[in-house]
Amino acid sequence: MKITTGLLFVATLTTLTACTSMKVDSEQNPDFDFSGVETYEWVQPPAKILDEEDTILNGNMQMALNNELSARGWKQVLDSDQADIQVVYYIKLAEHEEYTTPPSEGEPRLTGGGFTFNNDSGKWGYSDQSPDLNVYTVEIGTLSLLVYDTRNNEKAWSGTLQTKLNRSMPQEKQKEHLRRIARKITTRIP
Image (cartoon, rainbow, N blue to C red; front, side, top):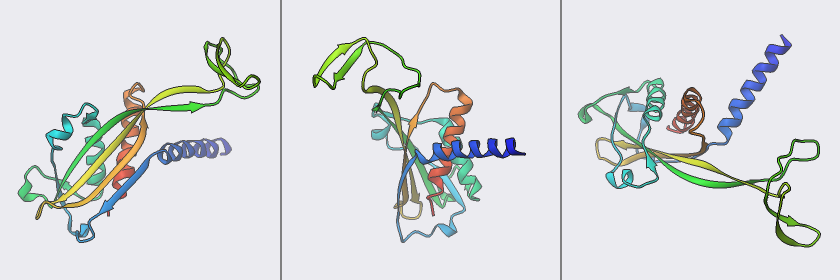
């Protein structure tokens, strides 16, 4: 029993940690009432957005969003005349540099050449030792999800979620990450 409880705690902590690294911002049109929404239609983002080099659409992301919208009791339709709302999404990609300090005493160290700062002399130099600062590049994805009222084409809700992406991880892990992303952003829809 102790092992099972411990494993459950670690799994929950891992999931919560992954979700807390997702930053979500949203805004709502206060005049739109979501309680009457029963159907939605997917629409393509404007060509101007899709033509930008850093913009992608991902079928797995749309599938994850579809599952979350369906879980709300909303039904996807293919005709605008039958839709209460129209939904559009797109993802912007950007590279971001992150910095870490070297491992502390007792942790494994990788030695290699690099720029280092010598605290004694107060100067930068090149050395075959572990640098004082490690730099690595990560990919940041920003998901934009927009909901429009089909009666007047006004925006009813918009949300953005920003998180680190690792497109080199196995496909199943990527799909699970996208499911967490979809759940996190759709919970902000009223």
